[in-house]
Image (cartoon, rainbow over all chains, first blue to last red; front, top):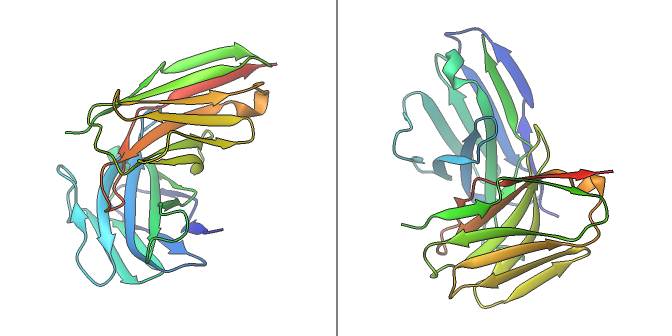
Length: 118
Length: 112
């Protein structure tokens, strides 16, 4: 089956530092990847849609200069939280849509990254 | 604008009971609807995906139905087990561009 990995699974950092989260599709190519954040006891909130080789499309209210997204290849997208602050602490989840749709014609989700900013 | 609502927000039932989780959406023009499971602090596991043209999908003890005209989907869990305890999320895909509209989820607790 299609597998998406995220690294790291958990990160703790000091306020003001930048943190990079990687999202990889392990056994398929993904032209489109999505980044979500999830606050405790809430549903997923789409942050941005990332297409390989082009700039990411950010949802309203998401600061593109704070959450830098790079989708440099068909199997890797990165989310960099710049100058992180405690309010950025959250659970970040990525997903990937297979190129050509794939048999299941759906997004595949990574296991998530827990970011804690002190 | 498509909105997805899940009721109840939380549900606690004894082991062995059959139960139904509800999902409603405001715009019947959907591409597909998907049910996910999320364990605490974990990512998402896709349970069932129902295409727009389908009425239901089954996987083991799970059955999901779709009624587009009324804007409703249900997830039926038969013979519930403590391992079914998790948050269940419903997501609607409005069109062909893979974006999903999410419900807030139902937190399910199965008591041994």
